[in-house]
Amino acid sequence: MLKLGLQLYTLRDLLEQDFKGTLAKVAELGYQGVEFHHFYGYSAEEVRSLLDELGLEMVGTHVQYDSLVNDFDQVVSYHKAIGNRNIIVPHLSEEQRSDWNLVFANLKEISNKLKPHDMVLLYHNHDFELTEKINEKTALDTLFSTLPEEVLAELDTCWIHYAGYDPVEYIAAYEGRLPIVHWKDLKRNSDGSPLTVELGQGEVDVAAVGDAADKAGVEWIVVEQDYCTNPPLESIETSLNWIKQYVNNGGKVNV
Image (tube, rainbow, N blue to C red; front, side, top):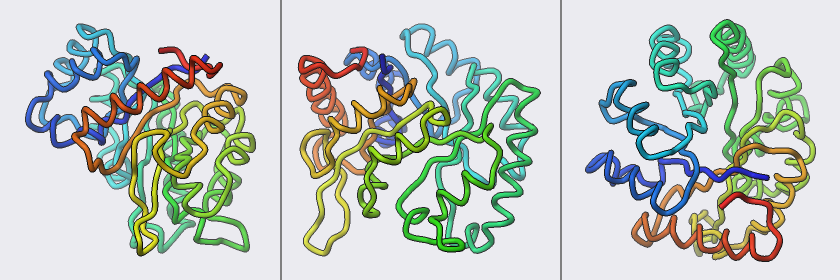
């Protein structure tokens, strides 16, 4: 059964104002785990103590590519102390991906350096990895076919959909290499640009995504909303209420 997490980027403004109180509300709503993108100056010991106090599990952490390349030892030390083993590259800038071969080489080296620390490297996609091609294949597929299987996927199913691909097919294709899936919905603005919305409010077949993730043996399915037009805590509660209805209809998520 899928475990339910929240990517805390959704609540970034609230976390900056009240880190501890916001995490407490996430736990109170019923999310099992959290995925970090920032720690707002809190020490590793403080973060770990707070998670233990609130009963929240550590899903993983988004760590900037440059930090992994240039500050590897510091990253490992902090994440060991908070009890995190899933190190996730969240994004590549246009400048960074101007040389995909260098990216592949660096990610392979980072993955190898994480192994002795019992940590694993994951890569999180946006839409550009699917719209950009390398030798007639999507950059995403080229990345994972080039890198060793120890480098795992965190598929963001919303961005796969927005790029024009079927997230259900992608989940099935990456079965066995896919511990975490991002669960996200969107609508399109009048100019075609994406607007992330609460689960069940947009055009993504989020129920099919949940079913496919469970079938593929995914461990964590993680709610994320890049931008909220409603108050963010209200948005994550709305998404959670949709998930509860999905579970009532047979969905396999632990809520």
